[in-house]
Length: 395
Image 1 (cartoon, rainbow, N blue to C red):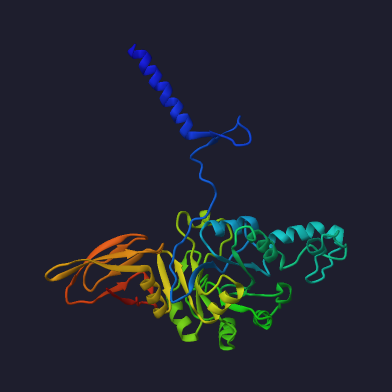
Image 2: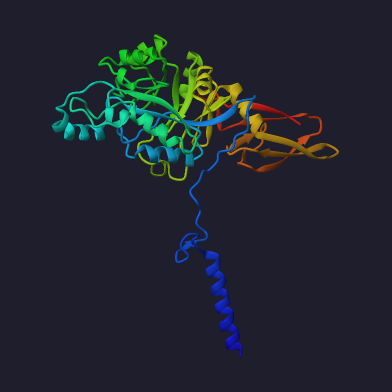
């Protein structure tokens, strides 16, 4: 009898486990679906409003197979949305387009190698390709990304990258372009001028990449001195350039942190987040985002650090942290200090040891009863090459 009871119990246990791990498909009952399957979705990055502005997460430097990237636009756009981004710039290289080059060489037998700038009747008009035209349009990757983004709400900024020798010339992203076909010029300075002529904002990319210092190249100095540069990357891929924070302040440039992704983010960064640009804007529109960049309301966020203008850093930290009195003693006040954001902070109070304030985490801190503010140095915020903001939180 005991064996029978045990066997029945095992069968019941197996049946229960079966019910927990699978369910019958709604359309075909002969299909079992795993019950613990997590539907593809989005990992949110929570940052509260700061001074009436929404804080949008942006990557202003990306590539696909339409230049020298290794993934298509569908993958790139959906990956950005899934990782919690709100904005992505499509910035294919004008000069380096190896996958398209292969296709162009193959299709020469059909069109004779002739090229009419900006014309692509197959894509634009759904008609057969004329033999006098070529299957290349430098705006196509932007349009393709915008079409994909209609399904998830990611804002796509049209752009391109003007790419010359990284050591002797430099790389520059043109953002908010209107026609990428009309930007190229053998002279890189003229190419940037062409981008500015159509209303683009120009960002200096990875200013330390492949160089032994952050010194200007001759071309970079011309572009800066002509006032053609609007922003600069302080973070790119796996690199952080603290000295660029001071340059951005001195030259009145917006600060940016971006992935410059060519492969998948998972392969390039593992479990870590990509570097990104925090944009403080009223709305998630091209007009509002552009206004924020022109007003320099941006911070770079990556590698656990937030970088940029001192006051904007302070405002962000104050918006993320809630301080609440939980007990008043005879000599001290005891506080809840809560991080209400997805950004981790490392803080230090006076000469005390530093503390890690993880996302959505609360610390209990003790203050003298005579104090009315909690003064914290935020060590993972950078407002210059070697300085961190000190924020006063009232309670």
